[in-house]
Image (cartoon, rainbow, N blue to C red; front, side, top):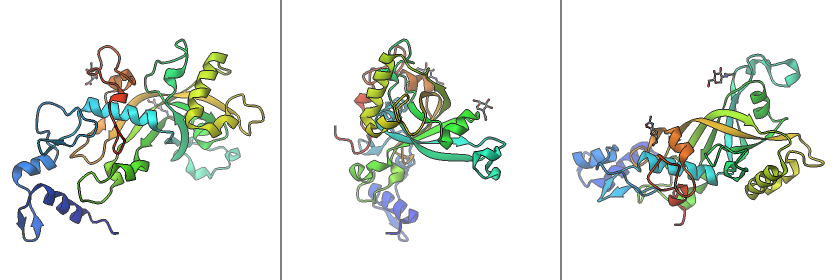
Length: 283
Ligand SMILES: *[C@@H]1O[C@H](CO)[C@@H](O)[C@H](O)[C@H]1NC(C)=O
Ligand SMILES: *[C@@H]1O[C@H](CO)[C@@H](O)[C@H](O)[C@H]1NC(C)=O
């Protein structure tokens, strides 16, 4: 099936207005305002993906969106880490020299395990993703050579459960959330104290049982590996289509302050990321 943006828009408008002119379906001015994403009321929606409020399309509040983003991190087993090749690539690197300075995005295993670390080692359960780094991997070579990084997570694998965002219109991955975390990699001490290693391994292997073979310190591991956290400094969110979801930079204090149930003092409204659902999740 060919996706036509014009047909799509016409279809959307048809849903919110019956007025047809010259074959185009035109919304009334107030429904057009709603479609264009003007928040209809001063009270933010507190539903996770609530798109309707007395028939007017509204977006979740920014805090609700940040809860959704933290939930996405908690549920995501992997994400694409983007790094840059160094400005000068040594001949020993086995990479074409004209890649110098260019970026590369590669999918890596991650897990939301910061909260499982003992309190003396942890940044608290603050949304800094845990990364299992492989020294041989291009991502980690670039980081070792000084590259900054970003990590992109998305919910696009859940399209079938999520269904169409507008009734009667095609399924659209573009309607589903994605978030990009900027920051730097903080390598954890090696070897970790036994209690910290055990807690991190238990948490990480829940989503990546296969990684047991190349855990830091694993005997007969094919590759040297290390634990690290991505210390988040900026968060960019695309909740989906801009008329029904937020798009923009998140408040990092809120990102870091959210917990599964509730949040730290001074952040939020008592809800945690366990209190929201992503599109298509069963309640
Ligand atoms: C990494 O980002 C910081 C700013 O956050 C910047 O000062 C530094 O130059 C960047 N490093 C590289 C290698 O681009
Ligand atoms: C970010 O959120 C915190 C906690 O709710 C708030 O105190 C702060 O003013 C917010 N920052 C911005 C730039 O809105």
